Image (cartoon, rainbow, N blue to C red; front, side, top):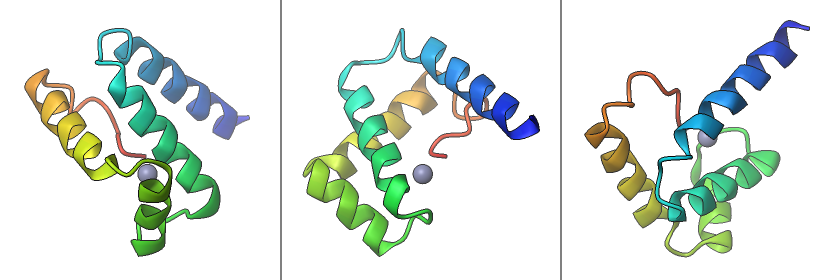
Length: 81
Ligand SMILES: [Zn+2]
């Protein structure tokens, strides 16, 4: 199935990226994806869920964006998804 293929390739890309990424970002990614189970859009309710699970969520997300810019991966990685 087309959808399954796309999902698998995205997971592989994230897996290879995070071999070289600070471990704290894995927590932020997990929180982000867990919040998507309940909220599809990046709306107010979505971020409230993120902060409920991880009070430092916004700091982690900012740190991750800066990190990705620094390693020049921003254009290659479709994150956040
Ligand atoms: Zn997202």
